[in-house]
Image (cartoon, rainbow, N blue to C red; front, top):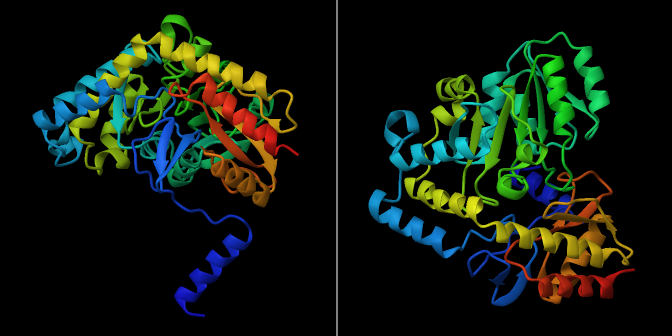
Length: 391
């Protein structure tokens, strides 16, 4: 068998199993309404939870910054690529999230790179990383690259995690978890995990990719899952992404200054990566200003989530419990999920089918994401379409 033939056989096998993926090309800015292949659609597919990716103030900030700073950084942060906008954004992020007193922040080009940095810098041979079984792939990959022992525990099961921590003699120990699980929409039991981190002298690594900008109440709306639970500790190493609710691109780590300085010195995905363009940092500062100030945007999104779940109650579909913009509708088999997504597409709705290995076998689903750009009418139209298609 030639090399090419082997690849072609593998692709054919994936297609036969309902696992082949294909890209759609947008012909409009991302948002609640998009155009794909000349077809107008209402999109329930994006992680742009607050509708900031095409917000006029964010776009204007990027445009003005491109004129002021150019479109490239030129080098890594440690060579000559660290600009005034990068430093200003990091200071604002640290002050907003506040995982501990005196926290600093460090920006990365993606959440994947940020999580690889955290786990490879803080763990190595002789260490152990305790990971929720439904963690995002980047936390798992970071654990594997660190060469530490990887210990998985059942989803959100703090009791089982305690047993595993108690039986380990590794040093140091890291507990790593998504804060909002990206395919289920539920929350990690962060207060219990932080208590275990204190009991067993461990770091708590919190990936808040889907909570930053969204969760938190009142004046803390948008500060993320730590604010939702009222948590702060020097043990917390917080990662938030900036291409979801913040509407632009990149990620950041916020933690005790000693943690951040360690990442600057030894994290390979920071040291050896060209810095993101400073224009993105200025766009993010504009987005962060909206996150902090526009509480009506948060209130609208929260109301949509409640309305959607209430409207879905009479239907036979299995909707997983979630109070976040991620609303997973479990179908089961791959073919069924693809068929349902295709039927919605024909009715003018873009809702992605999520299949293994992203989710466990037998739990293929539609991942419905609500955003502040949607209207109540959009939600009603989607539920009405699902009601027509329900078994």
